[in-house]
Image 1 (cartoon, protein in one colour):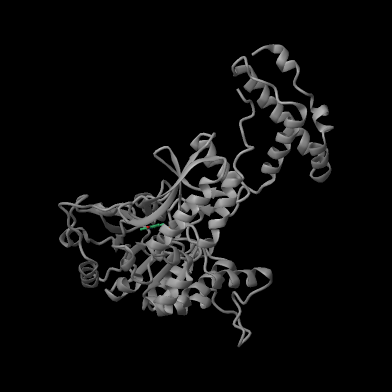
Image 2 (cartoon, rainbow, N blue to C red):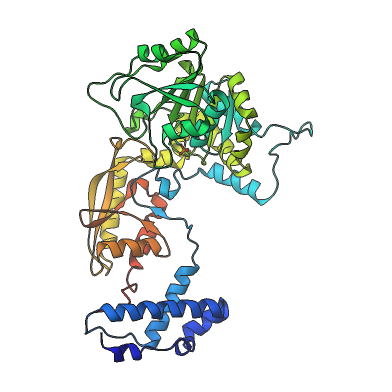
Length: 470
Ligand SMILES: *Cc1c(COP(=O)(O)O)cnc(C)c1O
């Protein structure tokens, strides 16, 4: 790149004289604007050095405008609410389940002030932190006792630490799950101090395999739901009923990590093979562990339900305190659980279940309407409604496919990647998915009230062109 072009770059001081940056300096701080201006100039310099010889230099006003935009973008908090147009309903990267209005109201009201977290208002005495949710969890699962902590990974770790440290826990080789890189059952087991005793093979484990492994140091039989994979073909797995019978014979607790913790049967909506907490308790599991923010559709937490004596032993472990939930989680969970007393109410009021159960014709109509609106926007070359499959996500099996409709966008000028990025960083942050060179906005995970936000977001794309136009 010709050196004289570099020499023509405006100085930081010149840029600071421009109205947008002068205003920002007054509003934010002089040093923020100076630092950002220097950074952008530096970027521009290195872009100019490597770009083609016809590259043109933006004028001072344009450059100041771009720096101002960059500063404002930088001022946006990195944790923002987003429109989830990925189609993945329980996207861990997008915070999993959205909360019900009831949960939000409860959460806001306790957030504003103080709350009876550990105070029994009738007697004025100190109470148990779990009082707000224990009764509800017992009622909905049929368990004798319940404890809620930070998340399900914590529930597993804590349960194993409290009941099995220094002793063996028998697990099928077909169930040594990994839920995202940071949760691998063998690692969780060793961190808890329990010794993993693997039995059977990857595809076949019979109840006799467990029986033969039981010895002096056995502390528990552990079953993990293979949430994110399925072993199919020539397979066998001991049933929960068999494990319970074996556990009873040897006075060993059966711990059932069911993962998602569905509280109602979701098979009518295509979600199959997800164990229900109440079914597991009914079949005799001594402890059942599940997440609050997966299929339950509540706040992030881990629920431990089961036999009173075991739950009490877990509650006394020092790690319980380290993993305890705050008033916000308690309030949100305590307001979500009552919705499950009537399954049809849960389906209507819990956002995750609303999205999951939205009729496909409804999504189709919305996709068609949106495609027409989006196709009329200059930054869009083409927009078409298309049928596709969406996923539950959040550590559920990829075979768990849900019918959906999406709008497939082809940008007019920008590359699909740049277009997708522009949507993510816009004023209504929209996260879609790129598929076959198109940007898909999948409506399975978008609330109908957000359709207009999609149109606004796409209309605002443009004006975010590259720094150097060559
Ligand atoms: C998701 C999952 C976990 C981890 O739960 P978090 O609430 O994400 O900590 C543990 N076990 C199983 C079987 C799971 O599906």
